[in-house]
Length: 114
Image 1 (cartoon, helix red, strand yellow):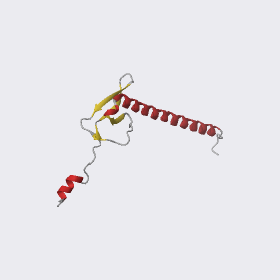
Image 2 (cartoon, rainbow, N blue to C red):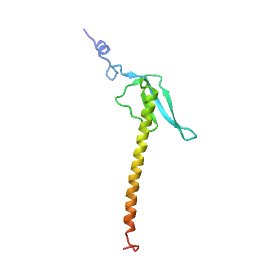
Image 3 (spheres, rainbow, N blue to C red):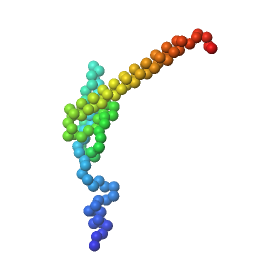
Image 4 (cartoon, rainbow, N blue to C red):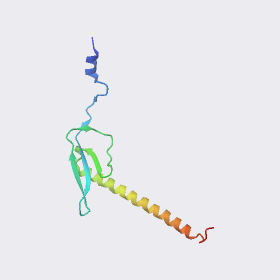
C-alpha cells in the first residue's frame, strides 16, 4: 500500500525542481577607466543557477553560463553594446533629418503672425 509520503518521494513535492537543469554561471560587467577605455570584469557565481533558454546582455552587464567562456561572453556583450549604440546613432540621425525638414518648412512661413 502506498502512502502519500512514498508517492511524494517518487514524484517530488509540488513546486520542487524535478530535473537537474542547473549550471555554473558568471556575471560580466563593462567598466570604464580614467582614460575612457572599457574593460570587462567577470564575477563567478558560487552556486549553480537555473539554465535559461536565452541569454541577452542588459546594458553593461551579461549573465551567462560559465562553460561559454569569458572570451565568447565578452564578444557577445560588446557586440550587443555596439548594436545598441548603432541604433542610437541611426535614431538620432533620423530625428535630426525630421527636425531639419521642419525647420525648412518653418522658414517658408511669413514673418507676421497670420
